[in-house]
Amino acid sequence: MSGKIRFAILASHPIPYYVPYYRALAKYSDLEVCAFFASRFGLDKTLDPGMGIELAWRTDLLSGYEHAFLPGAESIKKLSFRDVDNPGVGQALAGFRPDVVLLHGYTMMTMLRALVWCRVNGVTTLMISDSSLHSGTTPLMRALKRALLPTVFRQFSAFLCVGDRNEAYVRAFGVPAERTFRVPNVVDEGFWKFRERRDQERPRVRAELEIGKDDLLVLYVGKLIGRKRPGDLLDALAQLRSMPGARSVRVVFAGDGAQRAELERKATNLALPARFLGFVNIDVLPRYFCAADVLAHPAEIETFGVITIEAAILGLPLVLSDHVGAIGPTSIARPGDNALIYPCGDTAALATSLRRLADGPETLARMAAASLRISEELDARMAVRGTRTAVEYCLGRSAERFRSNERGAAA
Image (tube, rainbow, N blue to C red; front, side, top):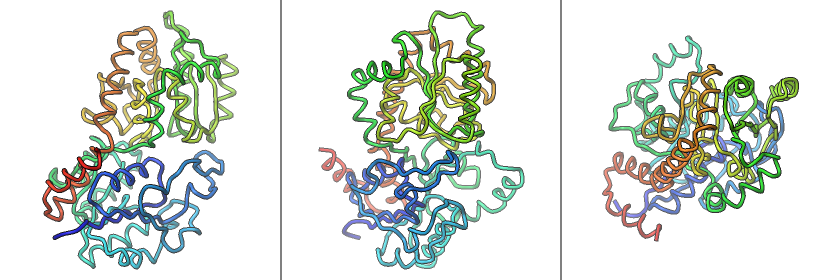
């Protein structure tokens, strides 16, 4: 076989933490990439049900790679199984004539239509998702998955896994190790640009937030909703008052959601050192990572948690509940290396972890350095290599041409 491999991607919408991956594939590989989107969610102002506000991402999500919107994309406003249904997906794929199709999961009608089209037409199909076994599904849903997913997963030639727990998820439903390939999440390029000027941004943003240079600033990024458990951080702050320590701990919440008013009242009534910024768009979000000392993510249900990558790029240690999918010995959050892990809902353990970092400058510095190192290891080029290796496994092509192309692009 000669010429470029035609590589189609099918996603529900331009997802901010996957678009950089598409750009990397287009830049660093010999794949001819085209991303097909089932909706315009995030581009046009759309109601986010978790935050309860209308939003559109103020960042460039469409440049640097070829893309197309499926027929009917403009009318889809919800990302549920039945709502994301583009009957014309097969015709759109046929027009591109792909050698390989990468599907973002299987839980939308459009994805299942595409999977059927690929099977009927003999096109190699890959899957990428961030699912993990800590997904909070009901017993009935777990039983259905055990019954159905082994059959569904057999329809795919290979799986691109974003981390250890994601790989464990697909392995649990019968996928053999040789059909899994590590493709770490790739985040917005802006975080890497801010990394170069973190020392300059840090004092400016902390002054804006009225955070003292000696305070430990803990950052929470995400929706203020039940399954993310933001209230656990307020409970931990309250418990820190009874723990001896010389350094004060303050928390900044970057996000919005149904619990925001309740959390603000609680923080005010208890006089807790917490500040609520509301929704922060991705173009300015790196500034707050620069100002912080630690990222805390107390979620009860978090299949992965891309904010852990964003934090690591900017050198933050991670304090995570054990339900966060980014945890693992070869993932971005490595216990004891750059991450402290505590049992979900155990606010005393969360407070203890924060106090340990507040009063342990050597531990804080060691974990910060580890985050920088690990984020460099799990970069865009690793994601491209993993994808290309999966394609070679499925199509039987030689790896040497890809490696030479990658070296040329990197130069």
